[in-house]
Length: 254
Image (cartoon, rainbow, N blue to C red; front, side):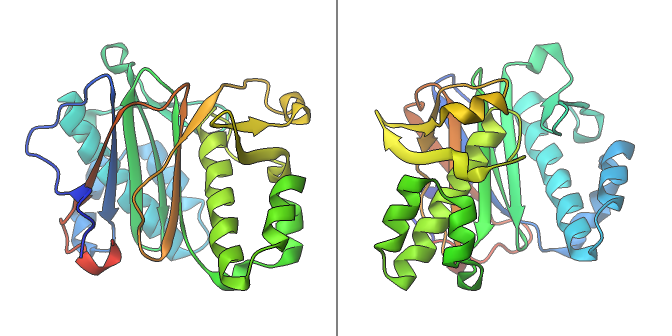
């Protein structure tokens, strides 16, 4: 069953200034590739760089849906949307009239998560939870000293949930500032101080651009971890859309 917070999207989308819209979309249907013509040549080039076919498939499907959703917000035909990328690959719309629309996406295991807002930088991370990937050795490399201290106090099951919460917050923060998780995740503190994740001073030497971010808590998605980070204070109105297009299974969200 879907959590009552996740709702089908309305026919007409309006993104108000105080809103964040988050979309959960199944990208598992082969029929979506009938629309592959709407992605650009540079997106096809990026897709070709993936070594595994499943990663290429997820990338292409996630980009098709991104264009379809952005088309609803902008009124621009999906195939006519043009993107600009910063040096770390974060996309923005190459259109001054839509420059206030900010977005980010993440995909994992046949699902994609998209986030949209106005005027504030945003980042989202979405990961399939795999308990086999969580060990104390991995935690030492990924967590800060304070995070690791708490990690060691938890039971095995609690460690998995805690690790993925920290990891997705680190990724979402890094994507919000436009860098991606390029190095040293154990320098990005995600435990709260004054309701904001803290970046240790050393990281400033690596991230030349730093911004104050707030973490937006998302409704739980069974089997996945997801976090959203946004520049400044979190906006007051979070709307969560789940697309039933191409057979999104109700059991995947609780």
